Length: 259
Length: 257
Image (tube, rainbow over all chains, first blue to last red):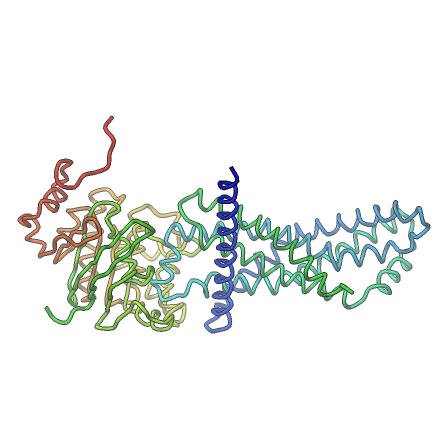
């Protein structure tokens, strides 16, 4: 009984290590191709629009409601200790350090990572990627590198916007529902905010942008079979990107704030 | 034969335990049109992909114009690919680009041609396959199967390649459209003076577009010769295939009802 169990565990471990190796070599190849010309500027701009501009509504909505809930929840907790004045600080620090990058990352992973895997996966199964090669165009340079660059550049901008909208959400609830003085709320927000709070969030966003686009491209590029293969690639891209975002979030937080 | 344009020696390729190519030797002369026939899963497409560098053979040598290509660098591969055009079985048109952008893709992205000039080249090539300039503004999804094949052919010849590969060019087309595509292939290959390798199991197409025919069975090239000799090949496998008989040395793995 124990031998089959060990066999299964062994197979799972080997499959896991093989997946890590495969993703790592894909990432190394993408970076290797990314540092050498040519760069397809039109593709990069198109992907920046796709990842950044078209994600603004969903990320903005997530941020404003998160900021509003955060203010409300903090108030119910902090009122017990007469520490209501800390609410602006809690809202802005939570948003810039954690919730802004993580929630924006997860929303973009769902919206963009899935679409990316589906698009590249369909190109793979319909031989469009092979066609690129026969037209002397490196598929990594044309498909993968522009997406990675766009993800790394646009996600920090998206998170910065999300931070501002989230703080606005907290401000609206604080001033119009919890009767905070508007000037005092804003002064508390700005006074307690440190450069590192925002900077760490933006670093996280850049890393998450890389991870989301890497997973979207990897699962699409390596998809096999027909519609089922593309469907699996889409699911895997979102799930793996989400898990990696949460995992890397811990390690980046540890790197910035651990004492 | 002059020094061959394409030369394969002892090419093997396996996927796990399945041996798809088992030592292919093949020479194709400049300006020759070679047709490779064989049943589904016989290794025809894998053979083309190995020559194109889309797959790496396990063993053997593939040379183009005398240059070994199995171990080329990225830059070397891009240089050799400049000689190739390829018509894929399903067309493989880029569905996010308009028809003219598909045809002009190689000239713009790989040869650095200005878009306006490339657009004129694309419209001329579309004309060469019997499509008007108005088709250039459509997206591939708006075209019929036959028109998609023609656009794919226009894209394959847009850079005036020295070598053109055709992967099942008539599959999925009605007999009349298939003949139109065959005529276009013959015309384009002869106009360019290109070397061609086509893979097909459509014998009408093979007879029309080929100078020579080779048959792959079980990963081996079991017969090759001029197209006129195909009916007197003296090979039982070839006879069974060209006449489409269920009975013969080639056994399909079909369970009896």
